[in-house]
Figure 1: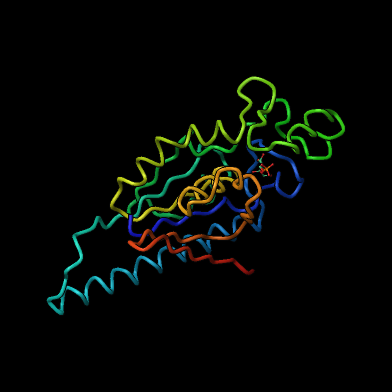
Figure 2: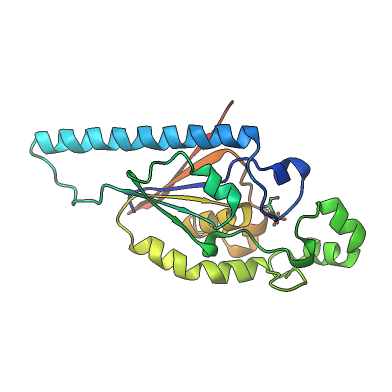
Length: 218
Ligand code: F6P
């Protein structure tokens, strides 16, 4: 794609409570980010459309024909779906996919980090020592490596696409996707800074990837 937009969902009630995993809805602030995001992306599309039109008018429309619709992908979780609620399905090709769900924390789902440290001190320590390989115990519990694995087919699809794309996902998935697109070693991915209410624009160019970062200020 010409541009891959990437963001985490808006702030959720679990983010406020410091709980990991779960399926909480957005907070009031998270909803404000969601509406700002939809306006921002709409504006970007209008700007692109303007430059396409002026290219065509000048008779110099040399860039290959591109699909007009922007694809919007979210996870299957409430907080990412709510983040795209204001995107008009007439203008965007919206898909929700399990591939983009957050790391599943097994027995630690919906606990805070200090609750994990208290209840499962050995697990907490094991993760601290090797976050990349550490797999959460319990049915369906995942590691970063597991999430990297499940994202592989999605990355292949992403490289094949010609339309613009917005991905609304979660902290771990965003670290991995950005890490992959920016060619960062996987050992560094678990500690990358990816804040809430920050939108990344990744543009694959012949000389390397250009990444722009936009932060929402209330
Ligand atoms: O707290 C939000 C969250 O997305 C959790 O759902 C997830 O377990 C966590 O961040 C991942 O971050 P880290 O791998 O640094 O614990």
